[in-house]
Image (cartoon, rainbow, N blue to C red; front, top):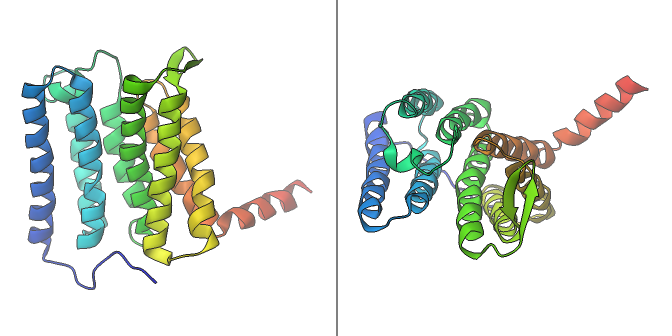
Length: 241
């Protein structure tokens, strides 16, 4: 059976140093792109996707949950301040009012608190769907979105939603395969997760999808893959009858 995490954990200072180095690389790449491109949305999505991939590094290094939660709190506060002060101009200057950066940081902390100690794969699923799925959906929709539709006053595109669905499926199936190997759950459960994530992303407003998509995706994957959804539905049914 495949496994992702190594059989050892480096010292905490080395874990933090490696993770910080990755974030520094993402930051430098964003700064370079900001000088080379006039499209702030591209810069924002590079940071969006690149930062989220740190969860795979944290999982491999076995970084403790408290470190991830503490980092989430710090970045959440920085994100809130950035809406008042020009702390993160390359991320927030995309011409729309949104709390997406704040929700992004909050969702990482919540997912780590919920799953990291016993089921880190669901933390990874939620965060990677948020980063890769939502990030690629926006870029594909803007560049190749020829068939728009509107929901709750927001314009989306079928091309962007398709990118969200396919990416969410790919992320979920690959993570599950890396943990539990080949099984029907590995390939079929991601279909439901992808559809849910796509729906949540389509109904997003003010960046709330950076909270609803990762939490909804991770919880759905957990309930379906661990068999708890059947138990939950059975319990609800017994109480209603």
